[in-house]
Length: 326
Image: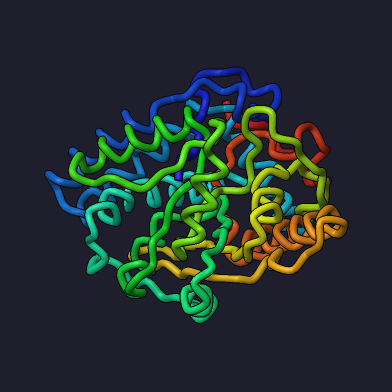
């Protein structure tokens, strides 16, 4: 739900880590996009998006370098092919398009989009059991299209779980899009946070969390992802294990134009895992999550919106020499 914006104007010596990057106002970008979109409409506003994407591509060298290194991993271009301007612009343009579409999704303008749900039965089954579930997403595609699922699935309540600082930012972000819209959010880091999540599960709610970035003091585990170990946070999986809930993976992939494909996958079910087997079950669930991230990155490579050194210094695959753009 809340991508870190890129660090504009920094030297391009190495990709930036998202926690070290200043928060370059998603709110500001969204306010600009809101004004353009409400004034011109979606079709005309998309013409302006390319200019915005080009601006960030030219003046965000660290994010540009991170994009190139990620695309080099996921596209697996054979020599002498390399990740060039066309690939980078498409990556930045996809990011801008997904942020822009939030304006309409938050306002329930689903009529503007062609949204197809895949394996929706997984959510239907969870609701039928009444146990609730952890819905695990990533900064991959759009999590906001989950609102479309809720519209088609009566009784589905999705509550986002995030750290308090991020909860404050996402509330400000939503207010920037539509002040009349509020979203259920549980802020972690309080003594009663786990109890609040437990009570939500007991009502049959689906609790959503983005599981690809560590926050605060979260422990991480390095797992294979696109050819090198990447640190993934343990916290979401530990929470599901302690509360004995099923975990589903959800990704809303942008396919260009007005097309989104929402995919659901089973990650784990901690309902009957004994305390002694919890560590192994968490490790297996995390491995499954990393595999799903890789799978869907390969399906829609330009939908990955982590513009920082996700592998924390691991060397990128060998490629033809490609000096970064000035």
